[in-house]
Image 1 (cartoon, rainbow, N blue to C red):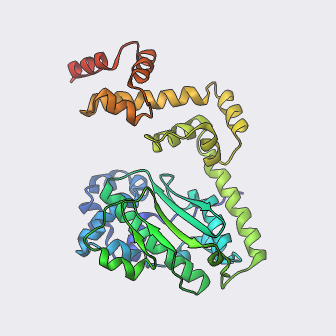
Image 2: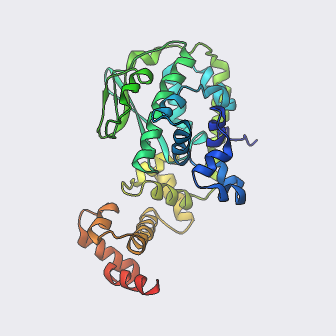
Image 3: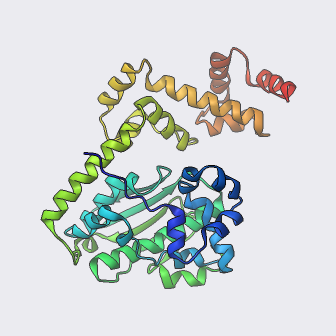
Length: 333
């Protein structure tokens, strides 16, 4: 049995907030795409649409306000799965494993634990700095909204770390983000006490939880079967360009062991190293052709600590050095 993924598409989410889809698309400059490719428009990332929503509202802090929408009732059976959890720890674990079912792969949560604290780290790999800031504001605001919706209780975090500079509207943050704030940090993350994870979910139903978890697992398998393994690996490497994950990390994100990943790639007549080189070569040629970046800059972006190593790799891939490739590319323009 195949179960439909319960994604709440970005445009539908903004409709909940009272926006007109065409206004959002027009301001986001993708109106033509909406006319020619309805599915592509459905899947347009909220990262690219949020600035339009903020502009239409005329309020720099509007992303924080959007985070106050209770999304759980709109997530179909996945929302029911969350409501059936026993406590907030189970909620977080469910979200961590099955988040690809409800959000794009370029948006991700990770959980890091110490003896007394839990850090919920939010990572987004697409968008400009401003777009990433708006997404962090919305997502962190919604973190507390969902936790209150499920547990029936408000709580404060130990700290919230944000990667970006302190914005002019930061005075509004305390209304939506109940925690001491630190800006210009290495990660966007919420640090909470472990005891808060024991807060019970007011609608807990252990029997239903097992049923919904089984459905989630089936959906995750269906999602991974949409593309072959080598394509999935390429997609992940492109998404993480700049901080290329190793084979263990890719295997974990694809919900399989390293050995299983290796076997599947072997059955498709390739391997992890080959795919990594293909992705780096594709990006290198794109940077050389369409940007003014130096070879040293490109080497750094492709995770090479030594520019000479990048040059040797480029020659191996293309039978010419980067400088010659740039000249050939310029001559074709």
